[in-house]
Image (cartoon, rainbow, N blue to C red; front, top):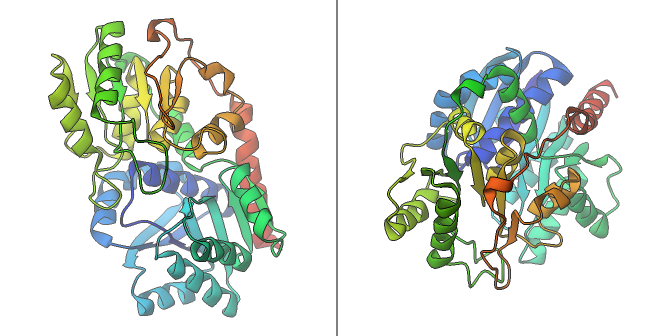
Length: 379
């Protein structure tokens, strides 16, 4: 199967790389052998991703990936050639949101329809949107697709509140979940568990989200002091993004590291691969996560984690994930909403009971993807 994947690659975070690994797992289980063209907004970063993660991608696909080639999806001629080459065009994970490359996705899906190619939105979220024109663009992308499987029910609700044009709309879970299941199957971590705390912070994204005015360096410093006092363990600060587009986490992590002057605190300044990042979380004693995919990876790979939620605490993507997994109650005392004057009161980590996501829960989400992907091709 020849698959063209487009989206926000070229500016990818570790979370985006986990999404891609999860999609390779799902596509290979649905369609067998894969040839991949990956459209990038900038190819330089994705070339590094391929160098670091290619072997893990092949493991996730059960060695069904025959080839992965990159091209600049901003170049119309190259994008046209890739669409003509492909059997299926996929928007592969991430949010449909307030950025200009959304119109590139819409163009690709409209061209695919003219050429009678199948098009899929796989594992995406909806928003945040600041203007109606980008919201309309997202709706038009979904309307033009042959199949859309959102990463959560809230995204599906947003679509249905605006359009009923497409009946092939479903919700499942973020594809990065399936990268964690592949990792756990192929890695023995019990003998490598370390006595340390793995923490991810990001700069508060004030542009997209309101009510984060009280979340500053002092707030993050207080969290580190509390964790250090509870555990008396080394603290490792883990970036989920190390590229200037999208916010390099190392800026805030090094700034906070210098401020707190704790004896045993360090930052992973050398960019980690996807597998390396997952191993750090899986082998840590406790975790703290702020970026959405840090929360996801820590929840599935560790379970002794604290969640810092910078999104809407009623309908944001992080609380949606907890609701999907029916674990919201399990995180009482371990969940901090950063919206509107948050406190740093958290449960003593030493009293944590590991949260474990049952395999049958993950299996149901996987089934939604596999059944619909297979049905689309057989239709």
